[in-house]
Length: 326
Image 1 (cartoon, rainbow, N blue to C red):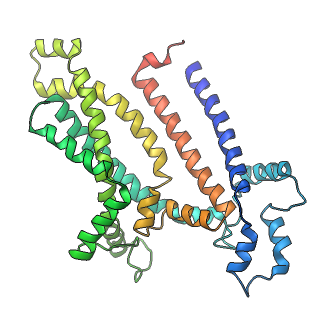
Image 2 (cartoon, one colour; image 1 turned 90 degrees about the vertical axis):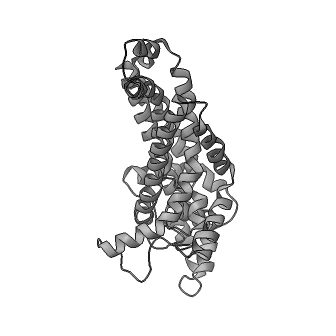
Image 3 (cartoon, one colour; image 1 turned 180 degrees about the vertical axis):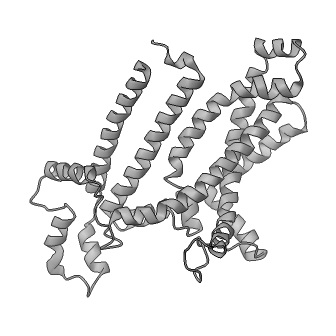
């Protein structure tokens, strides 16, 4: 119990530090977001409204940085993430709520596929090392070493432009109305297939290599040798003993990767013009949209911290040695 309480306390301090940094960084960036907002909405917003807008967005020059910090925490605890500059007057929470399902759906499924494929293939390669299956590692490592934007552009060139199998950009057919219908769901799957494939190809090598190395280490342990000596089937030894113990680091890494799913794959969403969190973060940075940047960073931070807590708890349950007092 003390182990879990210490971890929760540590993550609460980490959350406070992350929120504080999240508040400070946008305010030390060069540029005036209010002036950019007025310039973007010429004719709709008068220059006389600049002072009112600064007060509305918590950027009043008469207020100190500490006052802005206190107001930021007060609004944050009440669930108010502010109003987006870029999509004025839409609240930040609505912008994030619209983008989050797209990122979690696409990147989440792609991460789950790459983890499953990489772990299973890595376990087989590590168990039967020295066979033709070892050739899969350098091939997959080559694709993971290629810069992602280059891999995505090659995929678009081949499968979208040349073969015409998949669309080059977007998240669904714009002629359709978003609704829970098979036509719309099919369109979402169709548009998301190529981005998902590129994510799997780019990330599967890491899961394969990690699992393979752990299998090589575990296969020489005494309990594996004893299992063989008992006459257990090779399949039982592989999945019941070797793979079961080798997968512990994989589970920890997978839990951490789940936290970063919320952040999306920024380059992927830009290349494919996919309307996820990463794409909105890119537009927010370009427009000096403080509230949207802070809201997205906050969601990503909380997701990563929750994933870390889940990883710590899962590891503590699966491996009791980690709970021992130092």
